[in-house]
Every structure is written in C-alpha cells, then in structure tokens.
Image (cartoon, rainbow, N blue to C red):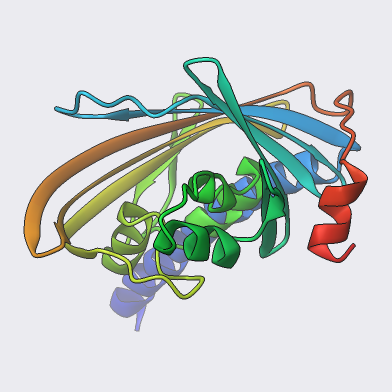
Length: 233
C-alpha cells in the first residue's frame, strides 16, 4: 500500500499545481475586467511575410462595450464590440460582420471584419488558458503549450464562427506566455503555426501576437450612440 501511495500523491499534487496555474491566470485576468476600465495594444508579427498587420488599440469599460481601433497609412478603422456582438464604422454607418460580408460579395469593400474577431485580452487570457495542455510558472512568467484543437482554432483566428467559411489548418501548434504584475495580468504573448489551406492552396504560417495591458482603472471611453443603437444596446 505504501508503494502505491507516493505515485498517487505525486500525481494528485501535479494536477493540483496545473489547476492552480490556470486559476491564477484567470484570477489575474478577472482583476483587470473587474476594474472600471483598461486600455490595451495588440501587435502581430507574421514570419516570412511582407505584410505587417496594423497595431490594434482597445479600450473597455467594466460591463460595457469595448472600442477597438486600428490604423494603416493614416486610415483609422473603428469597431465596437460587446460580448459576441460587434459593429464596424463605415462610410454607410455602423455595420455588423454579416453586413460587411454582404457588402464585400456585392463588390464593395467590407473592411474591418478582423476587428470584430478581436476581444479584450483579459477575456482572451482566460479563454486561451482553457485551451492549454498545462501551465507552468517560472521566472515570473506563466507559460504552456496549446492543445491540438486550441492551436487549430487560434491559428485560423476563429474564422467561420459567425457563418463564414474558415481555412483548413493542419499541423497546428501553439504556445502562450502570461506576465502578471501585482496579481494583475499585464501582458501575454501567443504563438501559433500551421499549414493553412486557402482556396486549395497550402500556406505555412507562423504568427506571434503580443497583448499589453495598461491604464487599468483609469481608462475612460465614450461609445457613440449610433454604435450602441446598431448593437441593440
């Protein structure tokens, strides 16, 4: 009996430690979402690509919509996201993802859909934590590898969730790192790679996305009334 007790105890301890790491990240993220508001930036690097995604800036208020913007060549795109709903500002008013797709299929530009797949990083932190095999803490950083399904979903940026046809992802891999300061989520970095099949063509992709959180508790944001109306708020 004694010979069996130690392995079982060690296994139970390992499961407890892994659960504690995920719980710690969720608690650190909740500390951000429980604040009156916060600001974040998202930068993305794609290996072996001549195209660099625009930096995204977001501001969120507790329990309210988040205003998310990106800028490229002097052109600013603005989206307002609340839960699973979102609208993008266009020359024809605020449009949902479906309306943007319809505009694109009709030969008109439907830009801004990428912003509608953005979510506040404190929300993403907890979601991604549940897609990891395990999380470990070392040198002030909590990190871990994604599950196969988690890597596949994050490699395709969740395309297809709102009715669109997403690319097929094979050999998907990924990892996540979290930085916590004073018990509060301050930064996270997601790395994913996969072979994506788009329109019958295979493309190898490796992407690093870095989220930085600041102005927790002091951020203010004004959501346009017409955006609220478009969201049904």
